[in-house]
Length: 51
Image (cartoon, rainbow, N blue to C red; front, top):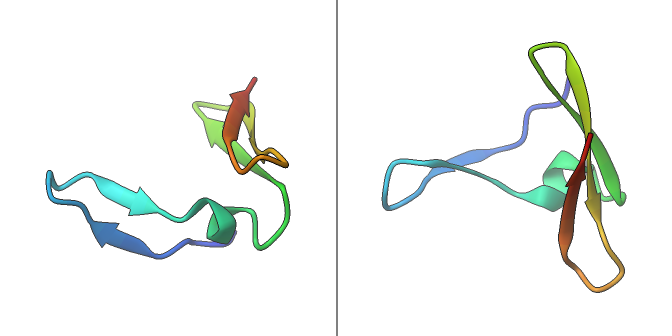
């Protein structure tokens, strides 16, 4: 498993770089309670999270 660098945000919320999560690609898999989600970076540089 790859861990992206985290930096404290002004409100103490963790910040993760999407390009680090995707390791320079366009997609990353994220799991929550055994459910698989896909984080995708679009050609326009926007993020989409799908189940």
